[in-house]
Amino acid sequence: MGISIIRCDTCDEWKATRKFRITGTSGGSFDFHPICIECEDPLNADVHDLERDDLIAEVKKLRKGIRDHRDAQGHALCWWVPELWGLLPEKITPKPEVPPTKEFLAACKLYRKSLG
Image 1 (cartoon, rainbow, N blue to C red):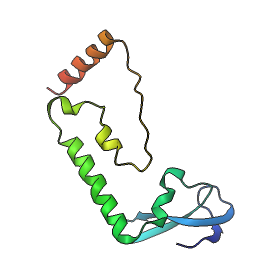
Image 2: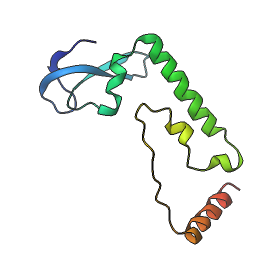
Image 3: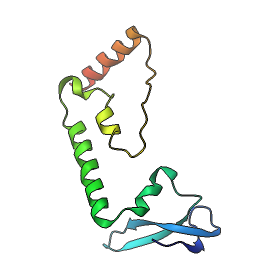
Image 4: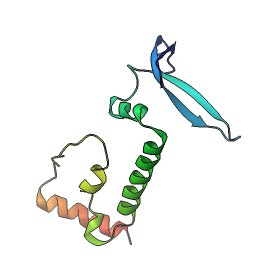
């Protein structure tokens, strides 16, 4: 997608833009909202360079990851899900901060109890 000069919906200034936010309406049509390069999320900037087939493959990969997490059972329900995070283009190794063991396990018990 090329770069154009347009008024950004986010900062309300005339700037270079290459991104349009698309929102659906109840009537089935779509609204296009321009966002300037400075206001767009830099973590998603690579999406603009993907071809249609690559975008479809990315959506399918993300949906599979989300469904795998949703459908997890037993200890796989834990919030620590590097397989899901690995679907993101930015590769980081998160270092979780957790409360002391006694407090952590008490919260786990409350969570389990809330499931019925």
